Image (cartoon, rainbow, N blue to C red; front, side, top):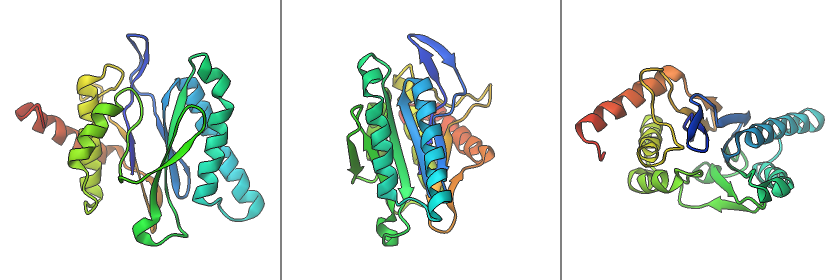
Length: 215
């Protein structure tokens, strides 16, 4: 599963409140990004097109390792821009249909130079609020959780990140702007969770934090 907040900033100003940072990239993968919005959006679009092109020309989907390596090359190609401050760092989540079910779900992270790393803890976070989000996940992560429990943990982590990081947007009940959440399973593939589902969970989280701000 992968989740992302909706805020984009320019310095200390909110540039956009409802930007999307999480995208389904093919049947069994999704990508989120942190950093320069324009570069990140372009990176994800090109990555999705490349995966679609490969599947149409080869007749099969690229393996998850192939997707990870492809994305690493694209990040590395942005290194010159990153050195000038236009950094974009993605996170890839996918379901490896060739692996045993217990090991099929994978999280792959990158650095600005294109280095790729498999995350073995079962959770990870990127971006300016990642320290707070990852700290929250460290306490809330449950490998035995069902889908609703996993979504709740992710929304809680984003809430904690937004509570301490100005570049992370929390649930906006007034404007009805909520995190983007996608799940990836063997039977269903990559699915963007319905907004109504995320809104209900986000409202539960906000109500609970009203009673207990520390969670």
